[in-house]
Length: 111
Image (cartoon, rainbow, N blue to C red; front, side, top):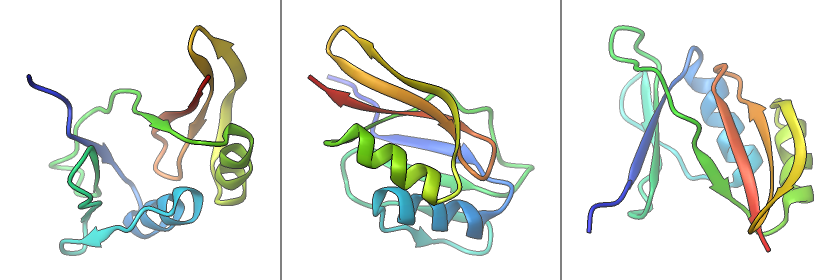
């Protein structure tokens, strides 16, 4: 069955975006030149595209976390901007934030 295994986000500042995801979530980012970096975990990987000519509009990726409150603290400390406070939904809780590149994402914790 087909499944999403990679999400690519535009990044206005590759260094800031790379540092953010490393600090907030512990992602190990691999740089591929001056304008691109990605995770290479082999599951659902994240790419950061800083070449404006190659960047596309991004959907709302949702990052699964074990502790939503700790994730919120880490996102804020790493420079993320909260856009929607934590809220419950059937199956868990989540919050939305913007990263340094202006992308909106969500972090969620399952029940």
